[in-house]
Amino acid sequence: MTFILGLTGSIGMGKSTTSGLFRERGVPVHDADAAVHGLYRGRAVAPIAQAFPGVVRAGAVDRSLLSAAVLGKPDALARLEAIIHPLVREEEEAFLARCRQSGAGVALLDVPLLLETGGEGRCDAVLVVTAPAEIQKARVLARPEMTEDKFAAILARQMPDAEKRRRAHFLVDSGQGIMAARRQVGSILRLLAGRPGRVHRVQANHA
Image 1 (cartoon, one colour):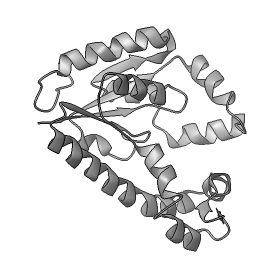
Image 2 (cartoon, rainbow, N blue to C red):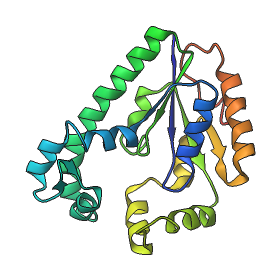
Image 3 (cartoon, rainbow, N blue to C red):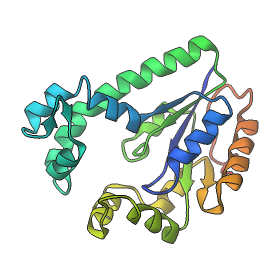
Image 4 (cartoon, helix red, strand yellow):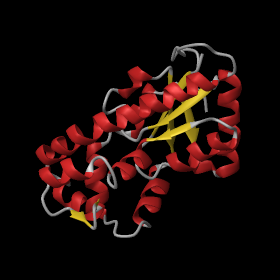
């Protein structure tokens, strides 16, 4: 039986780095962001072009134009999510079917808005990647084209880090550096080795 571990965390917390550490240990990973980017070049192009005229360039969705079309506009964002979320779920279900068929002990779902969208119900446990607020802010503002206002708008869509940590079964603190994060990932995988199903939160809030 494949144990499904959901990985999440707010922007700039180190989710991609942490999922990479699971890949290092041979854990199959489904990256929801990467799936979305693939859809922007594939099956989602036509419905997005219809819903948001002008955001498609050279046969692919221009992410900057799409972001401008939905940022700070809840109705527009809801229209986009109604297009994208079912397609991502299809790809996720196919990924999990492959993991079960191959006998993978653990499969990781890397989903930025896992808790905000109720996705924890699809997982046996939730891992939250966290870091001190000052480290998070410095990481995010170092990104190209990122501004204080854009950062604030993104945070407004996301559950506060403290609430995510409260709802987690496991924590990885990426603010301690890559070696510490690698040790934390190894510890989590040791705890999950051979576990057939859900983790109860009272047993395993671990960092």
